[in-house]
Image (cartoon, rainbow over the protein chains, first blue to last red):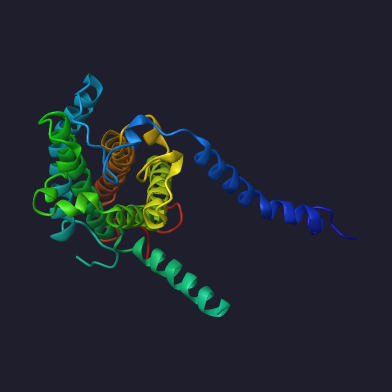
Length: 96
Length: 200
């Protein structure tokens, strides 16, 4: 007796499953093409806005937080690098 | 043709397995140095725009001072983001537990970031721009300008990677301290979700 769970899906159902991602991509492209452009997308050279930005608090907070994090992580990364590349870090197969 | 494809996939998976074995820590470290450098460039660019108030077109980070075409190169951004995504996928099996969870978060975030760069790249190649814009534009650029948006993207990808790496290396150090007799083994884990150090 055949197991219904292992039975192959009906042909129509299999086709739908294959088409689903295609349908999703088509809808997404349609959505993107129909959305209106923001003002910033006009009048500038390719790939970059020309405005001289104001500096809202949130972006300054983000920049300075990251400037603080960068030397911390950079230093930590350096220490790990020294350990890894100077035999301070064990590798599979090393024999002491 | 199908045989060649199958062979290539098998070679790639085999390479991935080796990468996550004995040399996972080394590969991960090298990869993170590149990612860290790229992150610094985005911070430098944001600093130039929002602290020094340079026009966005002139703010290309530190390398952009000597090679201004780098920041404007859509191909370069696309290629870098593709390699970032590939690295996240290639090095993923070496992580376990909480470190894996953070790494996966970075992978998902980079998946979206890459999709945005893919859209930018297609627009740049075809000259057909989304949303009726007169240059290539990403989806979230509808609400956030490109410099700010890609600083956010890189932060959202980099922070979970950093957390994952710290957790991963701390665990390795802890295990090394707990089992000094096993300290001759690998710091990276196997492709399976297993302890960091394993028997050969």
